[in-house]
Image (cartoon, rainbow, N blue to C red; front, side, top):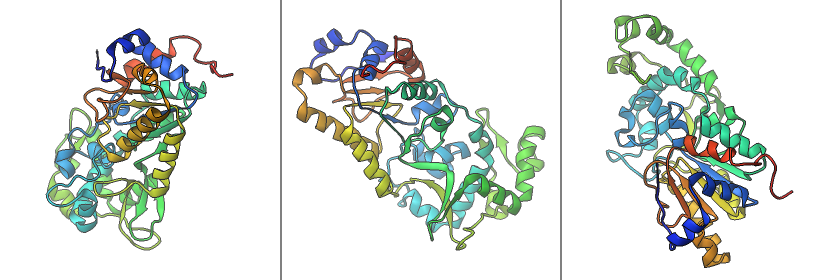
Length: 343
């Protein structure tokens, strides 16, 4: 475990924070309006991949495609001249490949359970230590743990029509896929009982990590996608793809929360999307406008816990290079966090 310190005074840092858990604990207990932003790093510990292989785009495995559709993807990036939203809308072949793999990986995806980070965060919310939570993740593991975050990039548990905007439940969509593709449904079941990659499993191979590879000839020729039940339009997961924008009402809500907070904690995000990075910059700028240099040097208002570099490493107060699931539970063990300090 390493700590990256990136702000003007190292001496001020060491005089204020005696170790990772203590420093983070002080941020949690020392501010009235703590805002938390979570990214893919809190879910990788639950077996859900992060965005690190996003350059491969639609050639990813189904589990990665489900998550990488939005989790921290650089919205402005393009691959082969087309953003993924453009490619999804333009190409029926791309949609078949996406939904075939996504359907195949859905059962494993929904079997994921909240990890230590999700549970610890929900505990801090119940103890009134956190004022607002925003997540870049689309997996709803925060909800399973008892949190109710603003889903900045949407969720794969909803499906939306690109033509009329009608939204429906993903589980209902799965049932429609099953009805349209009964042999596919049988093939998914055969992965548990038949020989992987056999004719019975329609060329699908279970990887060691649980993802599923599908032979191109099967999704190219024999996979049928449901259409919108209201207008017969094209359906997509209700998430932010490449080339897509965070809905304005959602973005506005996130920005308002950012303006009203007095401390900000980033968990498991490299802040590579502008939507998330913009929040951190806003908070940093606002904080510096009313705080003293000494308070800034103490790093009392901003912290990031993430494995690897982030876009905010140069100006954040406390930077911990570690897994969120290793650090956050330790904060709960520091003392009477169950009793709000401001009562």
